[in-house]
Image 1 (spheres, rainbow, N blue to C red):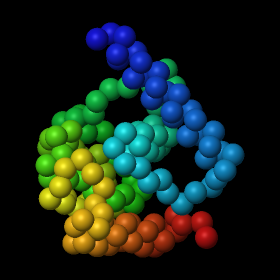
Image 2: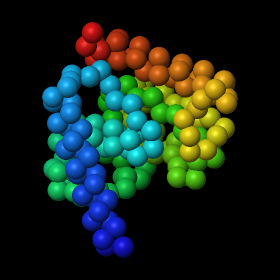
Image 3: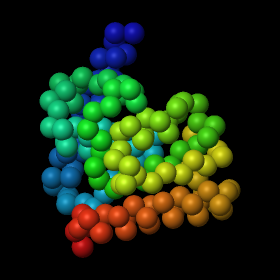
Image 4: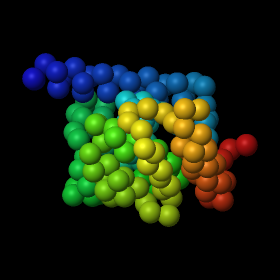
Length: 146
């Protein structure tokens, strides 16, 4: 188990460094969109950049629980997750604890670990609506560059 934790920490550290370099070289960008581990990387990257937490640079990756609290994520955030996703137990409580309430919009679709698609037009439409709402919030806060 120790090797697995070390691998994950190193992987996350390297992915965070790669993302930082990419943003520096290709940016600026108005936002980050990610699914599953990509969403985790985007959230972790934003959180650690905001906090300027050196733990990410050392490869120290810890799971965050709702009880730990801390400073919330302040940027507008859209969270879309599946009700049947086995990886996201009590996810709504965690997100509420990590995101500043007025800046987070969420939608829980009836599926599992998947991005809503044309197989459920209702879920797809709600997902698009949440993303548009998040973009509107960012515009109102002058966070959109163009």
